[in-house]
Image (cartoon, rainbow, N blue to C red; front, side, top):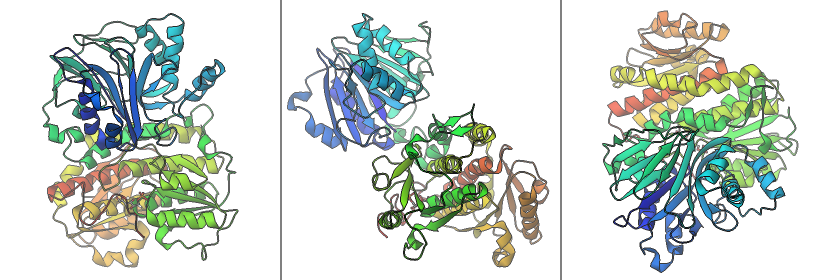
Length: 600
Ligand code: F6R
């Protein structure tokens, strides 16, 4: 996720460049691949570089700390165009009258870009953001003042944005937001804006959260917020009580908890511009002209493999032959794939060695390859024919949480596209998932379950159909961060062996939604364990009578089997998180594990 920062200081204030660089370093946790700043004291001075902040610092002129008092800065997490100096922010109009930084995705950027190009504008980058300074520049040409030109540009944007702009020769930073975070900081000797409080908490703990649709004008002595109609609002200033040390986690104890809570936002980003409610179509232009209904082979590891299993079932249910391989077990000499095959590598990081090897083998036999990944410019993105980005934003905690939900969402859309299926019902169900996850996050009783069972000998997870990969994922999360034995099973397999393991010391988590055949059968398996005195926790939508046989219930809203798998998994993430919390484990960095596994 990109990070933005802005500062206007009074004469007594700090040096703007120092404030911006400090702020950007505090935003590093969001993940980034390039960084840049624009200083605006008598002319706009832009410096930007691909790579780490150190690369930007090295590129700054020696006399850099010379007391400039106005500037904006940015850490870029690529979404449109690979990491490069040119794609790094800030972006300017052709004559450098305005510089802009942006976090979010401008959905209608292509049509804006086409209009601007037709009017003779030459673009310097591949980004969606660059349309903004050019739109502002056009309005300035037409005689609008800075504020009016800024508002006119923002009015033309569709999508999500937190945007800040500085103009040549003024002591003002303008900002606007829609569905991307933006917080303002109020200090005696200046004003700040940023994607997140840590960026300026060293300077002030007085903050104002800008609401969707609001605009801000920051000058050294004044901070004015207006609504979409230009009416001045009366914002409340809040005092942040965090220790700067904890601020990178936005007040959460762990990145994992923060990332679990970010899932509604992550999924909205994943769906943005890709779901057409009118036609029921899923729009994935990034897949080019992949012909539908071609047999699909997934390759993936760990959590991503569970997502691949989910994707396999989605395709099979739509009549498209599909299979999923653990990438470490994939061998192109043995698996019948050829130039007609479509091989999809599912990998959050885009760097996992086993998955990359499998993708390379698929490439070597001439198969068409697709990466479903979170990281723009990653090896998987570079070495496949097409890429579907899951847009979850960076994940810091070793245990994958929001990227799994985003993989499930992306693969649901991929399956609809590859089976050439239109379904308004599916589009509606997917659109509802972020709010449904939010309702689970707001009311989950997972912490009570963890308090009751954190001393268990082992945990078992069962599910059928779309809930089978969720059972596997629930167990993986539990073992990864609690260091307690946990296993997931297809519910029907329980009686073929694992039942010998269940006891009063081994809680069984059963994912049961709907009231159809699969629910009925899973309830049969629940009865088998309940009869042996084993505690049962049902993750359920209340449509069946599983509650009669369960000791505890973790509720999820009623929806389709596909959508409820995405939502039910959140309850299991929370159970694992709170259990690890009770046990005092190192939640974000579990022993022996690494975030990106780059060896086979
Ligand atoms: C578990 C987890 C791992 C990864 C696996 C593949 O929480 O994160 O199991 O899913 O190492 O990683 P990616 O998706 O980066 O290929």
